[in-house]
Image (cartoon, rainbow, N blue to C red; front, top):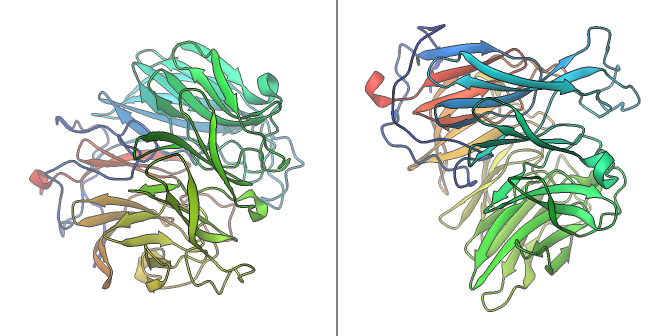
Length: 454
């Protein structure tokens, strides 16, 4: 647990390994587990090797890595587009262009870029939110204002394009479209939030043709919400789980037929962290409303509430887990996640009872401090976890029911987003090719975590 700056920056180095990809939000299986072997167990005293770095503009979207390529999106603000004094102000229309970049994963050299005009009128206007999804030679990106693109992964040429506000009558959510698209077989499933029962829409992944639509939203401000769709396989039923501002719904992934819905009206529409499926349990957590655990039936598609947070809890005095961005992780009968003011917490899976909390993971330079929306992203690797916090620090730690045990931490990128009361990095990194790929609003870096290098 010693603070060290990374040394040995290599601007145009080359990494030649045969390793895993990270082709979508939360990795290959969409579960925030990094399964590569040969990864460092501690950070060397000399620091980690920066393999390459490449320039980027603004963006919250994390990168995706597939087939020796890195895909990442950003937004170039027009020079005359001055942001409002408050990031919550959505009255200003800020001109700019969204871009999709493809880089060589070995050295960071640009291979192609696709860009389009995209003026922002959202809160926290600082770039795209959704990680690209790579599948079957295609790249799927969803921009802040609802531009869904399917691009050829080799050369970036557009294959098809849908615009949610125009095509479905969808209102742009206050914080922009943020629900990472899901490829399921021949379908691309997206949260749209439009009229005529199109809260969820399934497209033909190859053509963009609509295959089905389902559910209706009455939340004009937040529409479909911000959480990504997930697949749950419980008993004999394969279910598509949709967490939206008014509840949790289960659909047939092939037809969009509604199996069940558990009402869960959210304050400020804050369905953001990924719903976590663990066996026959389904867990969600929201900043104001707190956590809720569902029991999924084995013999038929049905659900019931096992436990949930108390109502009207003060946001600074919470008992359970009130997450804003970070998706929780479930292991060995316990839930690990980041609460409303940066408290990394451990809860019992069966009751929601808190076991412990620590502020160290979300605090800069290991100096514990509460911060509203303090954040760290959680990725499991073997018996340890890699935590990437909002200060741009990569932390190697063990999370167990006995507590938080920090092994090492290292600055990977500088926090550059100025829209909070402190500079932050709020983009999820990718872990692939025995490296971490992380970005801020100025650059993306590739840092080696290969054990054989050190």
